Length: 326
Image (cartoon, rainbow, N blue to C red; front, side, top):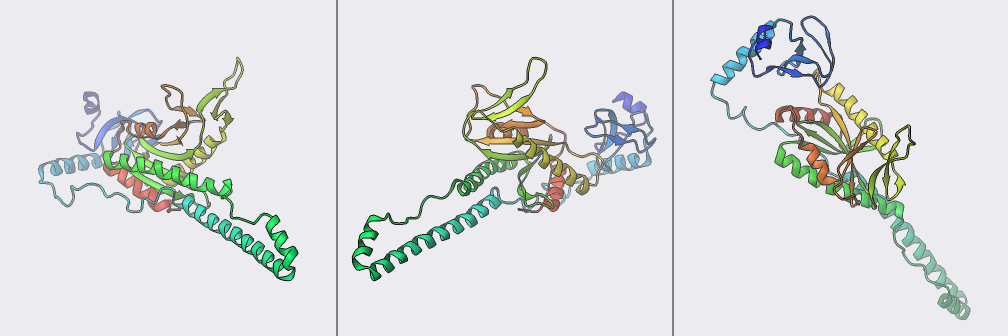
């Protein structure tokens, strides 16, 4: 801190020297500051400047306000916990509604088919009392069968999202994080299962309920690496592409909804439920997407970070307003 003080930095809880997570522009000299560079960051004003540049009048005002706030008695109404977005959504809500709608249509079709077959049997017996009864006894009766797999898959997916959502809600309640469930992608009918705002950044979580062993397999040769995601021996790498698109969507929405230069990093997580993992397995990455299970996903969210609960709530509110419930 002695070097920073020599450069003219004003002591303040809001103004501090840090490594930038995102690139910025010095408000004093206009120099480009790449991500990872050491710079002076004004948390209150969301501005950055070179360590070598002198302090601005705004820095002095920020420091004075910080000193005055520290000496004044806190207002209970202002010192309460940050406001969490009220509409966090319902985990698996859209998938459950799709299942119920398609299940009801399938049930109605099957009931109509059974009723039609029954009516034809009764008509045959009425018109041909002997032959009709014989045919009715020989021909198997129409019955309502089980739901097709393409319909039950929606129910399975909804249950998986609900289970992951419950784990995320427990984490948010214990750690002060923000969780948004089942958000609609702008201009699309697709949805994002979960968005978690943690101290270390924003995590876009896609829940998948697959059976079988989850593993990363290198299918490349001696001179190249080609990591594939496999579940029960089948190549499921394309799932990471879907998560990558969701990450890009959230990052784009955040750029428009968050009016500050410094923004949280956005990560993608593919969370598998009811799958098998190798002994002492650890989460791994495929195409920059983290592949994990529910408990490991919560551990990832608990990574240390510099975003405060108030900032997390602000980011959550911005995302909740921009991404409506599905």
